[in-house]
Amino acid sequence: MRGILLALKQRFVSLVGEIRDPKGISRQDQEVDNFSRLIASPLPRREMIKLLAVGLTAPLLGKLKSPVFASSSLQQTTKACCNGIPFITSNKCCTPSGIRQNYPIVDLAACPNKVQHPGSLPVPNGCGPAKNPTLRAIIPSGWGSANFLPCCNSHDDCWGTCRNNLNHRSKCDETFSACVSRACIPYKGIPVNPDIFFNCLTVSFAYYAAVALTPIGDSAWESAQKEGCDCCGLSTPTPAQTVCGSTCCSNGRKCCNGVCCPVGQICNGGVCSVNPCLPGVEFCSTNNCCGRCCGTSCCNGSNICCANSCNTPDVRCCNWRGTEFACGQGLFCCCGAGCCSN
Image 1 (tube, rainbow, N blue to C red):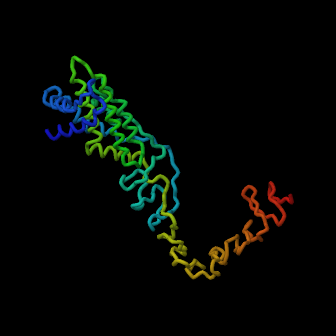
Image 2: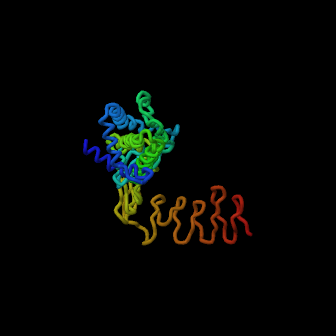
Image 3: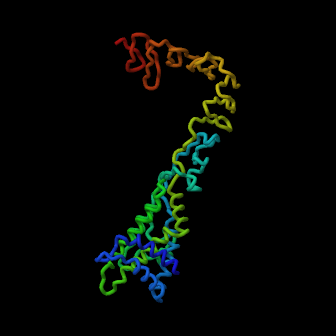
């Protein structure tokens, strides 16, 4: 018990640092003494057992979010590469540790770039579990005149918001701690019972401890983030890699019938081979010719490809509503599929 009280004392130093008596005298020692008396006296003990037992377990069940999801979402079915391994991007994404399920998240630690899940919104449920009305009925939303409900709702919103900042959870919990502590201010300075203010702070700490200092709190935080976040959002394939059958080609290697050709080779007639073209001239495997692919042929040098045909550099290539057409020397593109002289 002494160890628990020392831990509480250390916590109270930061918990009530902004709430001091009118003379500015620190009262952390008195808070611990008050907590000791609460445990030692019969009635407060029952109150604290109820608050700590229920407060350290049931409220955390309420942190398991029930996000509002969009009625439908478009699924990507394209292939991409992740660290040399091809994968279908429908509900999968590439992370530094490999291919992961995008939603729901399986392992938070493996998703360092998580984003808010589309259509998922944090749903505050007060200081008790939304899906268990029995427990919710016995978990108080405050202590006497101290109203903790706004603090609990804000904490739900904070936990259900997806962030990659490592300090996001601690900021949520510290804000909650300060909020429930301030809720006790109405009890400050009551001459009839001067200890009631510090008793209220003790209760508020039990609420904070439930979400911030217990394994159940850790589990609830993970559940809220897993339900509210996508692991990667849009698929993030490994750059400079292309899918090639059951593997991926990198470093500019060409894919040829499911095989990555050696660096510098091309796919010629379905077989990896040395580039038959002159140095600096690309090989068009589609048309099996040297030069830039253009329709069913290839363009070389400064010739331009327009309307699937190779043209001399002095030709203007025009586009009207998605249709290409070439205008000869001295002519200009006009509205409609036509050329104008001026």
